[in-house]
Image 1 (tube, rainbow, N blue to C red):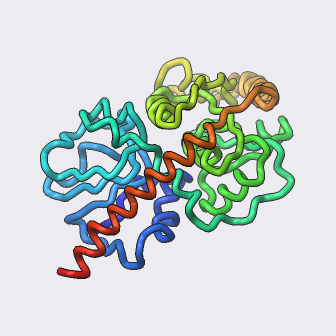
Image 2 (cartoon, rainbow, N blue to C red; image 1 turned 45 degrees about the vertical axis):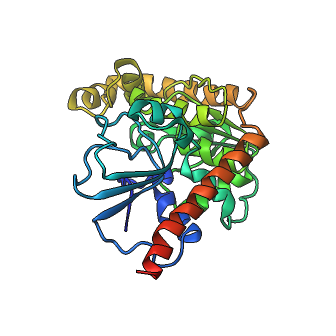
Length: 300
């Protein structure tokens, strides 16, 4: 079986959890890189562009709307659980499969020591690192910048040590919630990333109302207002031109003040009961996965 997940440039925290978390939860040598069977784990990676003949074993993934819907009833898909009810509804799956994002299983792993001296942290979406100016905005606001492109253990340590996490990155909220750190979700600068938040939140009975965060520069303002990425030649030329400089500076200061205002709002956190219930259901699914594949191989 081959571990399959999105690998971006720069690397993205939520996706990179696949490379570390499963090694603690599954037996050694569970993955052998055999592409005939694909392990589809953390991320919005239920997609239509996998090899048609490969078996797809889904463990806590979600459908994010990034591609057209796959035909999950063609006999090549095996579902152990998925991220939430919007995934089951979109794909015509049984509602009982909606448990939680697989990253909730970090609760069952050995965690790094919490980082110290963090009161409020902000994690942007990994695409906002290149497009936005959030490290500078955090410095102005007196808030710790949590870089989603850093190694997972470093990010987890920051989330554990924070009193509050403000996050544009969905897995910033998922991991904070799983580890019981209060969080505030902000509306993603690019609209394409918003569907999946509601999928996860509904699974844990979270009343999710994303907060508005002022864009940190004109490129983000472009993405927010047009629904485009802000990386095209026209947007780049306009937003990085010399006449745009004072507007970028104004956006930076407005973004910093916006972060400070959010830090004073009431945060979100799922109930202990909902989180424990989802963790138990996810671990039961993992036990079933191990029984299905490891024991079958042992007696083959």
